[in-house]
Amino acid sequence: MLLPDIQKSQTHISSANWILHPESAQVRKNGMLGVNLGPSYFSFWPGIPRTTMADATGTGALKSLVIFGCIFTAMCGLALFAVAIWVVVDPHDLYPIADVSGKDDIFAGGWIAIFTGFAFFLVACFGICAALRKSRSWMLVYLILMLIVYIFECASCITAATHRDYLVGNSNLVKKQMLKYYADDSDSGAQITKTWNRVMEDVHCCGADGPLDWIEYTSTFSEKFGPVNQWPLSCCKRNSNFEVENPEACKIGHNSSIYNKGCFQYIESKLSLYTWAIGWYGFAVLMFVFFHLLIAMLYYVKL
Image (cartoon, rainbow, N blue to C red; front, side, top):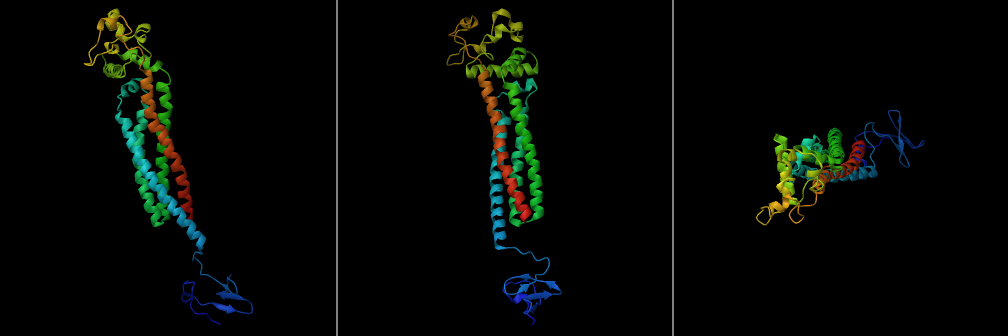
């Protein structure tokens, strides 16, 4: 016998007439064998997806995870953007020390992180739209863009982390630059002199490892000023008016009138802080984005 249109049934599948053969417990339509749904067999139109309740629930859960991941990635991207700007601005004014060595890659990593941080934010916002639209093409574009930004951020982190050790792994490189460029008449010399004077006066230190650096090694300063001034006046202790307390006692190296500790520990700590901000925070963001991309790929496959 002929059944009414399937559209009128509870299945709400597009209209079709079905032929029931009770004696064989089979339903045939245009010669196509049906699927057993209990007491009788039904054949679905080709091209209509057979989505179960579990599939819909799983896809919905993945969609929620993708949206949450995109929101968190966007916030992490803005934070990385702000941190990278802070590093590039160089609030401790140590860039000249890195610049004269030709190893300013910590700051180069900061410039890359500015781009990647803002790119993470923009691409994550696009990912939210793609997930809400449930569009495979949009999700594919999102995955490709996020992968490109991910690679650039990897380069930023690796650059900052590896070149930090070269620059401040020990005091030798910083000391060599100080002895060569301090009091030199070149542009680099003027920048290094200004930087070292500020560091020694603000941190109350002298030289890289101590005031003996100016005596034990040949320097541009000693060649210009001779034995009269064994070290710069910035190594001398100052009063509340920022004037040298006792210039004569400082010249002969009296302990009460000269800073005895070196400045390298301060320089190393600040450049390491820049590295932690760019490198290790960047690595933390990359770890989260890695797992987020795995979930986004799974959601893309399920669409």
